[in-house]
Length: 83
Image (tube, rainbow, N blue to C red; front, side, top):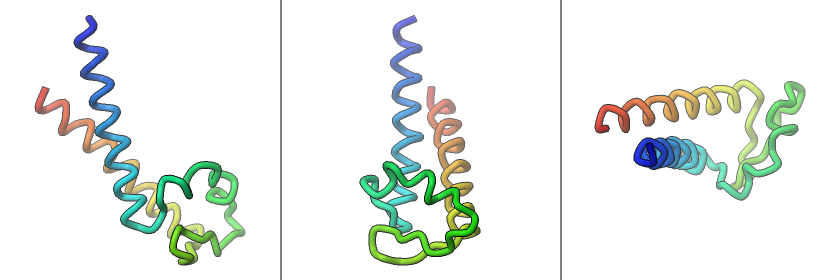
């Protein structure tokens, strides 16, 4: 039973690692992500700044968010294939 908990923990780490890599590659360093939820979800804010000062519109942010969701899911599936 303990092994399943360890495997699940490692799978979750793989998913979060993938999420943070994608966000970082697109300009949002992990320190920028904490506390950004209200700003990120504001449909009227078309100038959310990333870690490098680049502006992101609502649709661009959502596209990046959905990309992260997909990558998180795929990483979990790939890790489970190896299990």
